Amino acid sequence: MAYRFSVRFLTLLALAMGILQTSAAPAPQQEVAGEPQPLDGPLILDSSTRGSGGIKISGPKFRVVPLRGFSYPYALAFLPDGGILVTERAGRLRIVRDGKLDPQPIAGIPDVLNTRQRGMNDLALHPRFAENHWIYFTYYKPVAGTTNARATLARARYDGGYALSDVRDIFSTDSVVSGPSAAKIAFGRDGKIYMAIGIPIPRAANDTISANVTDAQEPNSYYGKVLRLNDDGSAPKDNPFSDRPGHKPELYALGIRNAMGLYFHPETGELWETENGPQGGDEINIIKAGRNYGWPVISYGRSYTGDLSGGTGPASDQTFASGMEQPWLFWSPSISTAAITFYTGNRFPAWKGNIFVGGLIGAQLQRIVLSPTNGLPIRRQPMLTELHQRIREVEQGPDGLLYLLTDEEAGALLRIEPVDGKP
Image (cartoon, rainbow, N blue to C red):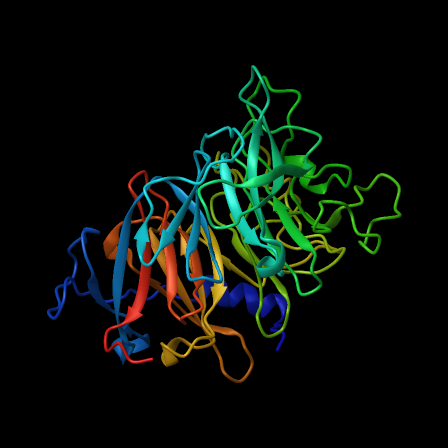
């Protein structure tokens, strides 16, 4: 089902909706609230919350099982044999086998520029991985002698050992960035790769060569865009701007600030995106071919100077403009949204159909509850706040459990499982 509601309803809903706090419990079998929890072993927490008027809304207890040993992990992918591949920002590819992190990284990753969001980013398996063993990853390719980098998509063959083979870049931007910029990928039902490249903010004052905030509206730039690519990195002939002069043929959608999550809805096939705003204005968008999502012309956030316009914020104080899309949902203040997933499993029946979004600023996993009648958001619940861990990645595993990555120097893979252990 596609989810829609009016612009005015969206605005009032997002501004008025309170954020509900999760009650917490520490290690097994007894509950204590308010204490930060170490990631040294399994923890039992409670997803019950308080609604309007202080009425308790029951939710399932769940166990958080950490696997430590990562450094700034960024993305994960589940292998058919049960293994889990994990990228680390510094340019490492790790593998988890039988619930244990292999201490030896997988060789073959090119050099990356590891600074802030730039570095090694996202990871995806080819839809026919079982046949061709292709994996895809995004990284920021350093420009020699500078602190600039190019957003790059690479493909490699992984046969299960300790090294990649046939590693090659299949797409790279023709201009560079000097500031933080994410690069996310997802395979669509059409077998195409959808790649979101963020606009770097801010750009250094003396920088005259790298991409800047206005590139998000520049159709001849790759930054601030969602691209659509063939599995070899080439541009499909049926892309919405493929025959339009002055437009990159890979372009699928524009006006994107910095996409931090890219996800195809498992039932509708729609492409959902989470996007960081400046001060306020984090968004969830449903990305459609040829649409303009507004940045930096419209935004629900302020620039870092506090101004409604200028600087690194929106080019005007508008939140609406003709021909530009409204967000499906936005946050003010920001939680620095990260990855997004819809829960469709059976291990947590109370969460079925909910959206889960990682939060970096709020150090949380946010659960968004949707109305069963119209698919609109009716409640947002921060979870895992007691852990004080930035949540970068969230995925549903083949086993129906949730798997998260913490964006920390001493990072971890977290498995969220029912306390009762029932399937």
